[in-house]
Amino acid sequence: MSFSNDVKSEIACTVTDSDKKFACLYGMIIFCKQYTRDTICLQTESDVVARLFPQLMSEVFHDAIHIEKEMLQRKNKTALYSFQINGQELVSRVSSMMKINPDKREIDIKNIDNNNLANFLAGVFLSCGSVTNPNNEYHLEFVVATGQLYSDLSLMLGSIGLEGKKVIRKNSHILYFKESENIEDILTFMGAQQSTLELINVKILKDVRNRVNRISNCDLANCNKTIEAALKQKMDIELIASSCGLDSLPVTLQEIAAARINHPELSLKELGEILDPPIGRSGVNHRLKRITKIADELRQKNQK
Image 1 (cartoon, rainbow, N blue to C red):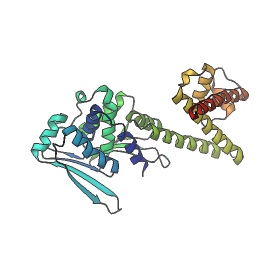
Image 2: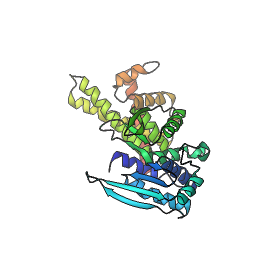
Image 3: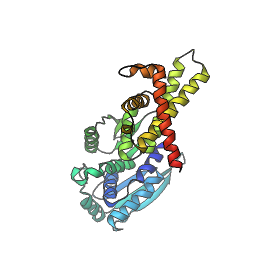
Image 4: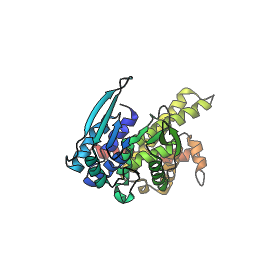
């Protein structure tokens, strides 16, 4: 399974109650491949989307909408699922409930409760989004059918601090992100926290390896220890954050925890130098050992 499909599988699990289902389905339908007065067509290569779309249609419309499903096999042997709603009467029924104008598709913000904006964006991603395996590159994109929808989506993401870039590809408007921090924020906002952690872990390994490669006289064994130690410290900090919150720590430990998360590539000496006021290597080591002890106590407590 691809990383993109893993993300879609994870966010599909967040669509639980009726409001979330409506918001997610609204995002999927309005950003589908084709929407006219006669036909609505959603196409996907994702097994997750192929299962979720008819399920949401059935639950939101109570089986009142007939969907024609077709599975095509491409030359590379991947499956392409196509879902079509045909006929003016059925399309009109969908358009009426979803408040979509077939002649000018645009996001109706009144259709999205503030609490369900994340599920709407999840639906958009399920319908026209993809994300590359972070081991290869950082790239997340939405393939949008119309310029109006591109503008609406761009403004919506911009309102939460996410500024993407645009390119035209095969008559589609592509809104894409290449900064890992933006991709992390989008995945987290849509409910794919586990995928976000996977991306962060990949980035940490890349950052550490790149730094190691730049240090020509670094002993390989010591470098491996540095990587393992940094990852172990990060895991300890994440455990504390998820169990009782970093604000439960003394201020000095909060500072070193933030420094380690933000700068996983730095040595203990370099970590101490970026603190205010700076501290020595032994001071950093002492604080990180206190964090490890707290994390170990939490692990023992969780095992009981």
